[in-house]
Length: 141
Image (cartoon, rainbow, N blue to C red; front, top):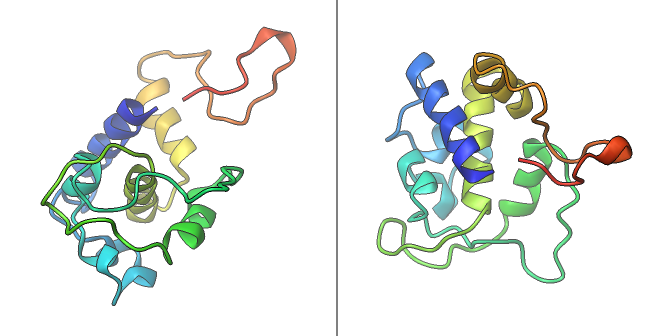
């Protein structure tokens, strides 16, 4: 899913005021005064943001929307100074996705449908969670 998220976010950057050098707090004011607020979109997508890679254990990845994910991510400390290291993970991508939602006023799944799936005629691609009846995989990008 991260490559799909990056494609969606890139399309949003091409079509809206959202920019690669925008800071998190420009689009997500709840991050103002927080170290994560100064992180740039390009750092989120290049895994150089310093955002911890995943929620601490025991983690519950049961939220369905990026706005509720921000509630879980906001209080977490960064693990290194933004731009100084590479660390692969998913939480930074969720922040970037939420920035795209704010820039467009649309949910990320809608952005994927409009910017990627429909133009490419992708009829069997879905976001999780999906209905697992009928042989569908339970987790899809």
